[in-house]
Amino acid sequence: MNASVPLLEALTALSGLLAVLAIATTACKVQRALRLRRRRRLEATVRPHVLRVLAEDENPGSADQMNDSLGRTFEELLISLLPKLRGADRDALVAALDNRGVLERARRRTSRPGAVGRARAAQLLGDSGDERALPGLARLLEDRDPDVRTVAARALGKLGPAAVEPLLAAIDAPRPVPAGIVTMALVHAGAGGADDLAQGLDSSRSARVRAVAAELLGQLGVLSATGRLAQTLADDPDPATRRAAARSLGRLGLPEGITPLLAALREAEPSALRIDAARALGRIGGASAVASLRELLVAPDIEVARAGAEGLATCGGTGMSALEGAAEDPVSAPPAREALARLALYGSRRPAVAP
Amino acid sequence: MPTVLVVDDDPDIRDIATMKLEQAGLEVVTEADGEGGLAAALELVPDALLLDWMMPRLTGIEVCVRLREHPQTARLPIILLTAKAQEADIERGFAAGANDYIVKPFSPRELVARITAALARGAK
Image 1 (cartoon, each protein chain N blue to C red):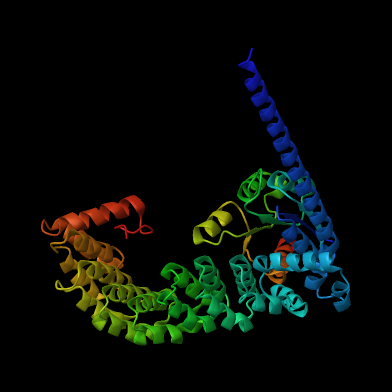
Image 2 (image 1 turned 60 degrees about the horizontal axis):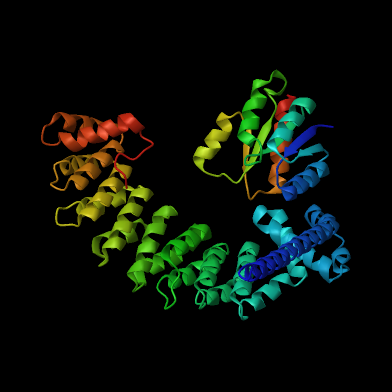
């Protein structure tokens, strides 16, 4: 009898707790539903104004007369459309946001406390493509919060060539931005920043900066950088930068790339560089490339020999003939047959050797 | 007046496309998912179809393939509007029967120009 009293009390307390939890959960759900409904009502009210901005017949006064809630919702809708549109209609959204002082407020927010606020401001400024935001975003590349730095880097990439210099510098800053994030941002910035990339390749003391610059000059198709890349491949002290230069020479595909790439095939060079050089030569082609790649098939390092075979397979008709001939020669047969078998399996759209 | 069916699960895209196409003097009907889009296309047989790829219930690609199986919609101009921008995606879109392909983020003006051109080609 005595033992059942504490049990009863515990059960009562538990039931009470559960009831309180249920009431709290329901209250939260109701509150959320009410907030959502209010939000939808506000959105429905301002949506015609947003569409009028895009229809280019917006009465400049009509959006100014909105109260605070409607004005905020109007601005949030404009902001949410920015990443969905491009061209003149996106410009119209940016102009409307600028007229309402939203961009100016965002620029000020980049230096305020609160990492989330700074990151949101950076995102908006990037989406707007507003070059006036460049100094503020460049400053955020050194933000104490790594997520803010990442958002700022992506945002800067959307501002175009003017962002290349600060982005490159962020790779080896005291508070760095990951090279992969910077690379993607630089791709977004486009080939207009080629001069700054070339400058980074020539003069940066950071090997990581030089490697990224070398890679991007090829990815962005900057043909005028062929000479610089050839020089980098020949004498840069950093192996990763030399490899990036080799890959880029292959992507650019100019015959001027052949001589430095042939030099990079020498046995004294690191295997990783020889492999990249072989693949790059395969992209460019030519008689001297075919002859050297054919010789590579007997390299003691099987990965180098495979890269030679892969290079031949992408060298066009002459390369394929050389590869088929090598497959009949017992000394060079293994990598050549492997490459031919891969080609038969996957066709030319798949690399013969996984990168 | 030519009719364009706009099928997209994003209300913003539907609203913007509708406004721009109506401004260009076209009649617009909208649907918010692939199933509704397929049914509306077969029932209305519009003059052109603007079709999102990633949608609930039925993807734009599936809608495209099914429309090509019906004689009344086999030659319907279909413009895919999608965030899928890879070369392989574009190939897949055309293989499914799309006539044109617009990548998001998109220019509404370009969208109107492409649909107008598709309508003009269809009218010949």
